[in-house]
Length: 203
Image 1 (spheres, one colour):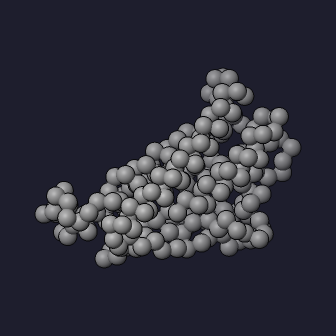
Image 2 (cartoon, rainbow, N blue to C red):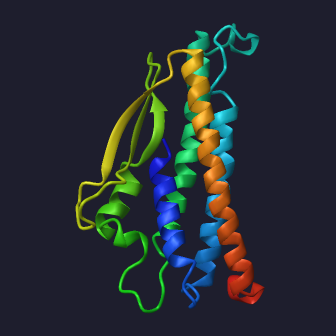
Image 3 (cartoon, one colour):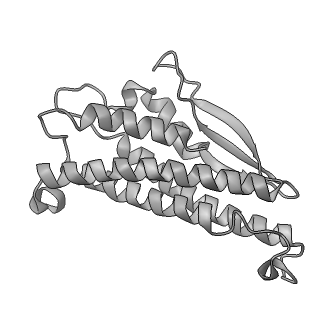
């Protein structure tokens, strides 16, 4: 979970932020920064809000949702939906980052442009839990594509969250992934501060 986001972020930033020339469209760079900030916040929400609740906890009992697992599933899916929205917005902004001498953006050197846009808009899912299920279904981007022109971008997966221990394990993975993304966020922040003026970003 989030392996694709980490892979894409590191790949794009490693290539894009080291060039002497500034990235085109400073406002889009700043939008990417703000979107990544939202992603980091929403990962924290998913990892540390409802995910690891034990079904015996008092706040899950005697609710209008029915069983404790139903209330847990509802709020976890709500958190996941918020993260999914911020990830889509981040990926769309990231897909515009390029330099003047490039014929395509950095992310489109990895993924076919038309296929990527369609997948993000229609199919990308960081995860959801179906009714009466304790498996988290994800539909993320492949990170081992052999051909950037491939139209088959997705990798479907199921994550078992049926026990408290498995939920704690997922929480740990999410928080560890977030630390990596926070480091990348700091790199982008430094790049913006070093390269652009306020007028560049807001003008």
